[in-house]
Image (cartoon, helix red, strand yellow):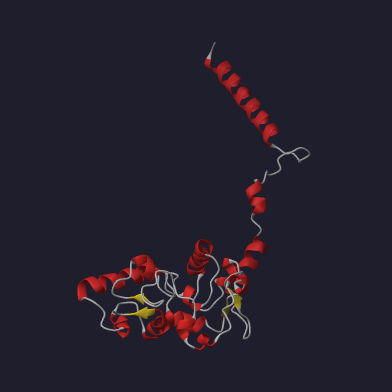
Length: 221
């Protein structure tokens, strides 16, 4: 067979294949030559994306607060100095450890410190935990801070001894995570025993307000 008839047959074969493929890929009832839009393009709703972007950038109102135990990550991200990255860490901590009981629990989230908590104090609430906190007995001992429920790992009269507590016992204290607990152990190893609870302020990561908050739970023997 000469080259010219073979070329003609090849062109006819390509035309038939192309027409067959167009028939298979076209939608029923669609006009010939119409563009087939993928399902993913249908799902990409520009209006919805704009609405979500507007929601994330909208600042809180003067009297508006965010419940950190109920709010989705988009609402948490609206808080001042909280971006989406930190909002996701707050959400992950809530999922792993349960509802926040107050600022001390929030302080345990990586990236949240006492300065940020001071900024957020009038902008956040901690709902959905009232039924989880046992009602304390109605007696006169409640007039002192030490009457509150002590953390786990009691060493002396319900207090945690800074000079003998384990990492797990320190982590159980309000406002102390793994990093701060290890900082206490490192200080104890390198500097020796704590002479007083106030010496905790010499440990990296412990400001004056945090030391004051922890004092009712601690002893240095």
